[in-house]
Amino acid sequence: MQVFTIIKKRRSVRSFTDEAVDEDKLKKLVEAAIWAPSGGNRQPWNVIIVQPKEYIEQIKAVSPGILGNPRALIILCADRTKTSGNEEEAGSGIGLYKHYQNVGIGIAAQNICLEATELGLGSCMIKGCNQKAVMELLDIPDRFVPERTVSLGYS
Image 1 (cartoon, rainbow, N blue to C red):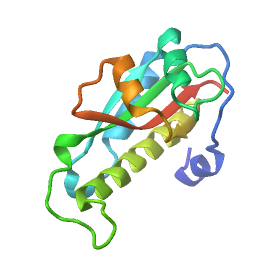
Image 2: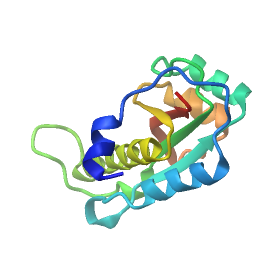
Image 3: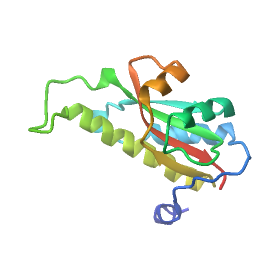
């Protein structure tokens, strides 16, 4: 597909079939995230793929934005070790590196959604979750904080 065609075709999908998402497609989605640009090329994210239905259901219970029955989740976690820096944006209280990190994670999530469209998958980008609960459910080290989730499946 041409890029603009993919952009126009991409939608937030919240209803999925029961068909499992192929592992090769999940690898391509992770590769799409890896190729996302980031400030200073820090690539301040880590990617977690969740496929077992019982884990997806537990994550849904603490993530009000995840609707429907996704067959896979890709969770983009901020890497706290890549946000260090003394710069603060004037008056915002948000560190400059933290700002760049959030932008980079958003771009990586968009890359995943666009590649999902190319692969014939439906996707939905979600911000809201109880970060601490997701970290506990998936035994995520404190260094990584869930920032965005992309729900996936066949429309």
